[in-house]
Length: 252
Ligand code: ADP
Ligand code: ASP
Ligand code: MG
Image 1: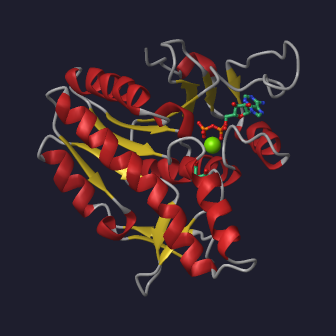
Image 2 (image 1 turned 90 degrees about the horizontal axis):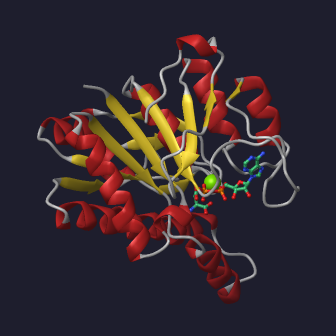
């Protein structure tokens, strides 16, 4: 039995059908006997439209309130996925950053993670639940809601992996791996089976949004292997690691 963190990005939970597909995959892992924590992003387009809404109201929206607004997107996804898992006969509980005490700095819209209290997550796992956690959000010491910056759910997932000493961190997205260049922009780039933390960080900071730069930094610091793969099929993706590839076991 392993502890597996799976993160699903916006396109992977874009609508009811996609959420049901995610629930099926999650339950497949659960039936294999693993503990599963799922981190989800807001449905595709939701964060963009919430930002648009804020700027339609004001040219200078207060950043505390902007964070309060934006985190509502992830809450749509956690509740939807928990409902989907239960509809398939599984046991799931959604949790947000406030409930878990997922502590960050006070830098609204670009907060950094300070501390994660793992107690409630561990309790819910031990009761047999799939834990569905809201990506991208945190709380300050004063219980104000923060966000980790655009694309920050990847960082939520890897930080949880570090805090809980997870066996695997899988990031599910809409491409089947990390390529030498953005496959949606460049024609026929090469898919990488493995990529080092340093190379991945360089890609991420140069704007390849496939992984949030901070998630790669945390993975490097704690030696966490990230398996980046597609939620649209079962193919293996790319492993971000500094380990020798012979030592890596693929999770099918
Ligand atoms: P998610 O919503 O799942 O977090 P993102 O849109 O943040 O997904 O990241 C996935 C996107 O990253 C892909 O759709 C792809 O267009 C883009 N991307 C940019 N550079 C790369 C790259 N080198 N390899 C793979 N995908 C890349
Ligand atoms: N929903 C947030 C965003 O669109 C966080 C994420 O997707 O990782 O940036
Ligand atoms: Mg992303």
